Picture 1 (tube, one colour):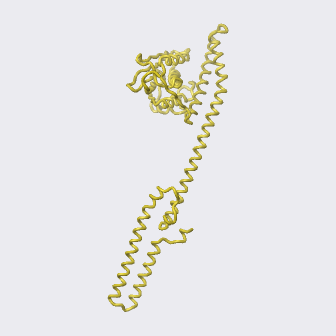
Picture 2 (cartoon, one colour; picture 1 turned 45 degrees about the vertical axis):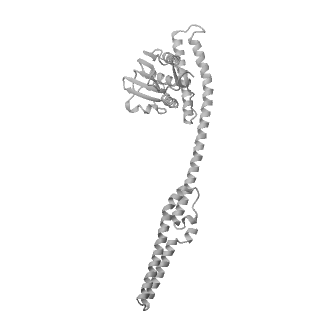
Picture 3 (cartoon, one colour; picture 1 turned 30 degrees about the vertical axis):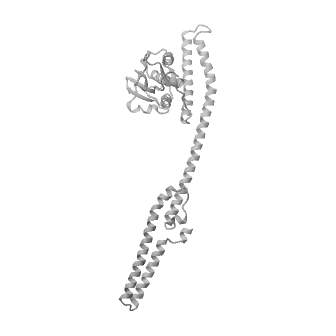
Length: 348
């Protein structure tokens, strides 16, 4: 390498000065020079040492500026830039090359992961569509039978059909949560907020939850502040948020109450609260329950759930620029509070 064949300027100059001084001192000792001759040798030595000091000072300053030049420059250093710091310059050039290669590999890996996420989301959507189509037909015919349009049902027949209806609804919601989770992971989950009438939406969610509590000593109640007419949200996603929280409350409340309340939370926010008198959650798990595939409690393994509802709920609330809070006490129940911005004033 060129850097190996060429010595640094300081080393060459220092060696030259040392040889010259040694020669002058040897000559002055071997010859009978007078005081004037010896003074001339001393002056010459001082001049040479001064020149060496100035060169070393200039080169040291240039070497001190070298790291900043490397950071600011997008090109590899040349011999002219670092001939007086050969080893450092070569090392910095290698480091710059390795950094560029690492960044290129990171970009390629990120692109590959994003492509995999897109393919996964497309696959899940296709599979979900193929599964939900016959499932919706099954649920539709189950509703027809429960309404006794084809004739009266015995008590045992109605109970069997109710079990089929609940299981089908659970599967349908599970498909939806899996797809939403995949979409959120690949940044494809979106919301389109607008002014949504509150009362009809709350009534629909409470009606669904009330139907799901068949045979259980649980009372589902709701209250909306009369001063609140609309909320700024994506109607489908808001119904999903409320449905997840209300069904989750019902699921972990074997007996007691589930209350859904909507009220003002100041000039800029609306609070939607879901309170239950169920099992409650340990304090140390209050943040874990929003993680994917985490269940609120494992006390009863017979309780259905894949641990996706609360994770999806938090992601949807975040997309609305809102926030979620939870309070709970074991044996006394839980309180989930969702705060959403009021949005622009007036109807859309």
